Length: 367
Picture 1 (tube, helix red, strand yellow):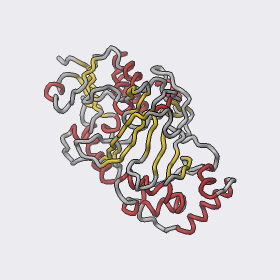
Picture 2 (cartoon, helix red, strand yellow):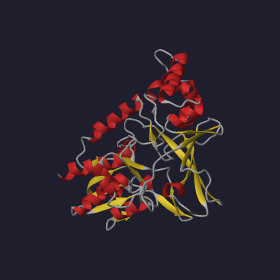
Picture 3 (spheres, helix red, strand yellow):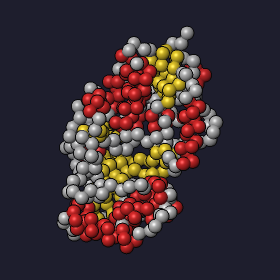
């Protein structure tokens, strides 16, 4: 007889929500994670009394009231509004592209003036049937915005020249003709006061958790320990790469404590020139309006991926999507394994979408 009803592989948001809901229904759950902490990529660690986002900036946003109310059970959220800025060779621009951006670029003041300037630039360089990302982006926003705010950042992010990237990667670029620096259009937005880790701690309270426990290294013990497995790791690895390896982009983070109370004046600054090797610097204290005497910054470097590195961004091109669909079809034949999350479903999810997916999984499983 199995010791547990559910073995949940991964103590990130998806796995923790499932464990929390299953536990409420009296199910016996074991949660394991190969890392030495819970929380997955939303993990925050307190350094110099600052909640540091260890795996990149996580800003919660959603227009789904059910999701907003659900996550607010576990933490109080502040009123943080995501307003990143771009640094291009020392020039500062607001993101997403808005009237403040256009005013800085061209001295235009009205939306009509900005629209006319963008159309002028688009027409000047328009390419019929764009064959690569560069041509597509210029068709969308013109040469000036592309060269200052898109080109270098995109090439760093993907590890390839824009002329070598397929055009479909950029289907649209957000352009707003208002003086509004709010990056998201969602109704609800904020950062949990005290960081994200507390949320997962509350979800997993009273549930058995084993850290530093790699499913694949302990497979013989674990595969028959529970009636069902909730698997949030790589779906291709679960099936021993039967059809081949799915591809990702990875990230490297370099954090440092600085003896100043304010390094850059904003939580997120993107560096859009190619010659700067990192894509952005995060100053964590600004997420919670910190007044600490010191600050912690993190430089974020895009990186190639292999099986020894963390997989952050699925490369959802046609080749990889076709490969994933083979694994998905195989998984649908299984009666005792449910795949979820970014790696299990081979899709980049914002946090609110992870919650939606997890709650939908819970409904299917228990209702």
